[in-house]
Image (tube, rainbow, N blue to C red; front, side, top):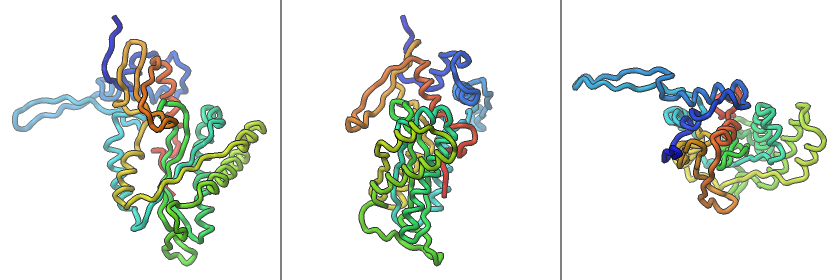
Length: 302
């Protein structure tokens, strides 16, 4: 009879496959091994003793890798506390820049190029719209590369203050009076032009790819402003230190497969489940391991 475990973790799945037999890069394999060793004897541990009763408790060390579902809690809280001190007394807006699927192949082959270009193009777009209104904007940008089913879906969550510094060096509120930061359709067109120009300047992307990128509409999504600083902090808590999949979404791990839950946003966020082999599950997970040195935590502040 096949062994099954209700629930499970990414580390449990990793320990069921031979990582060396897969087609991972050196950086990917090193990261995945760190996750598989997290909070096990392989990383050593420490003993805590109670001064009162003398009880001894052994705790294994964490891997502290930014891609580990078990290690992001304390880092998230530390980062949020620092950002809370930076918040301005104004409205904040949420803008999402998404890359089309035509770029997925290049993102797999050269993720550093694509993700850095995504940051640069998003900032150039917002900066241009801010300059039009006579202000220097700022933003906090958070890179996510995954869809709910672990497919490649690079997008940038941006939190933008509703104002900036004018040419006189003074704070100025956003001029527009509607409920959104800027016109979404206009931002989408500018974002596409900025990204393609940067990609062409890098010497990557052939003519066929460029034609494909200009043949479809790109997506920039804008939400209404947050209710206040408290809502901004709550949002940051949900998004800043996310990884491709959290352990609580894993429903079952068997000797051969992994079953996990996801939301199908093409059908209004309908809750569904997917079953993959161990190898396919980890292959998809590995797509979201950021290249070494890319933005450190995946967050850039301008």
